[in-house]
Length: 253
Image 1: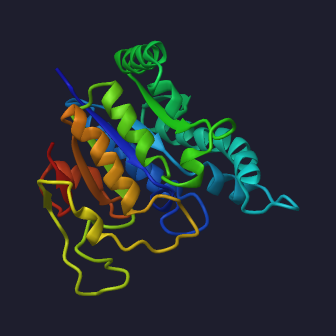
Image 2 (image 1 turned 30 degrees about the vertical axis):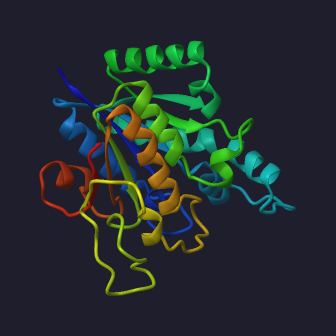
C-alpha cells in the first residue's frame, strides 16, 4: 500500500524568490512526483495565487489590504491551477483543484466529506492541488501561507508525512538570513521552547514564517504525523530528502 505525503509549496518556492511564478520549479515538482508515484500518493497544498495575479494583471488601486488580497487571489487562483495543469499533464500527471477553508476541518460532516473526496481523487490517480478559498476566508492570507491548512489536510487524510517546502533548509537555532553562524536543527524531539529559535524576517512574497510551521507541527503531533521542513528552492528537494541525500529539519511525532 502506498504511503501518503502532503507536500506544501510556499509562495517563495513557487516564485524561486522572485516576483514571478517559476515554470521551471513547477516542472521540477512534477518530475519528482512522477518519480515517487509508485511508492507514494501525493497531495499538494499550494500557495501563490496572489503572486500569480500580480504576474498577469496590473490593477489600479490595488493595496495591501485584505479585500484587495482576496480579489487578487480570486484572479490568480485559476491561472495558477492552469499552470499546474499544463505542466503536470506534460508529465502524464492528472490534477484536480480543491479549494478549502479551515472551517471544513472543524465540522465533523465536512471533515468526512473532505477526507472522502481527497482519498477518492488519489484512488482515481489524480493529484489534488489544495489551496485556501481566499475569497471567503482570510486566516492564511493574513498569516500562515497555508502552513496550517497543509497540516489539517495531512491529518484529515491520515498522511504518513507532511513535507513543507520553503526557502530555507529547515529550522535553525537562529535566523540564518541574519546570523551566518546559525546551525540547522536536523531532528526535533520536543516542540516545547522552540519559540526561542524563531527570528522572523519580513517577506514581500509569502506570509508564512517559522512560527506558522511550528504551529503546523503542533497540529500534526496530535495525529502522530511526521513533519519535514526543507528547502524547496533546491532542485530535486523531495527526492533528495526521501533518499537521504540532503539535510533538513525532521519532526517525528
